[in-house]
Length: 364
Image (cartoon, rainbow, N blue to C red; front, top):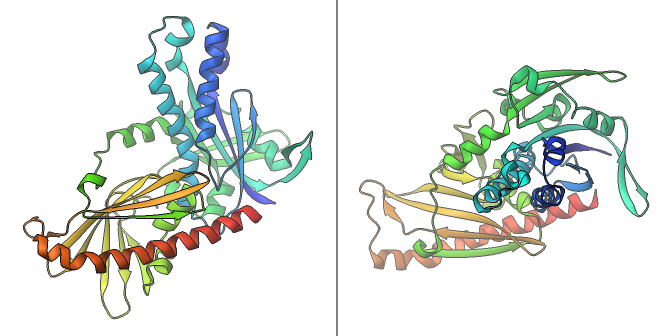
């Protein structure tokens, strides 16, 4: 089987345990690992917990774009960093374990290759040369050579398989060499810088209380798979039922605030969806000109719900592009039913496509 192999390892673990009260230290590590595990979703699957590390894998998905896979891996760090910050803010204990929480960090290694699964002692285990390589990569010289403490290393085979050359173009190139393995080339990004960037974002989203129209659709797929169908231009083309969708203003191969989806309707008309704000696998806000000087702003939320995902959309009242003023109440009322019907039908198609993709991921 071919796929991606991911290790998320808590750094500073040994020193933290040996210099702290064992009971408190173990509780802190357990809470952090549980936060990371809770954030795992398809296309990633938990393989095992290896002391201070979590080992995950996923088959190489034809149905999920590379950006979604990378952001699913990055979200592991977001769960860790968020839990760490909460602990620091909420603790009043002055023991060594609680005082030294901030000394903990995380490093993530992502390698792609072949592996086999087998059942040993009632548990599924992975084996193969590439599994060994992924674990070897945890012992590296990244901090010494780059100065990056909390990092994510993605090897060249992953870059090639996921088609993320543009995404890693701004990352730091790095090479490790191991006996019996040879050179492993890859790219390193700073996870702490990514976390700080996300925290600094000014949220631009339509809230439930401000919505003119509210819609909700359920999918049996995981939030990451639903998110992928929301953001992948090829999938948007299908569920929007338009002639074509192209992306513009994409930074380093990553769709984000300021990016545009140009949706061609086949009659020479192109509708532009501008991303105003987004938090991967959480929400995305668009602004869309509708013609006659009118525009729409709306936010789609991807919300875990039981074993699936609820896609909730809040559309703000339509407004004048020139003045920013909301349209008259009678005009909004006249347009409401057609707007609701058109958008609901599209989201129903999105959910159906995500269900089909989820079933293919499960059957691999």
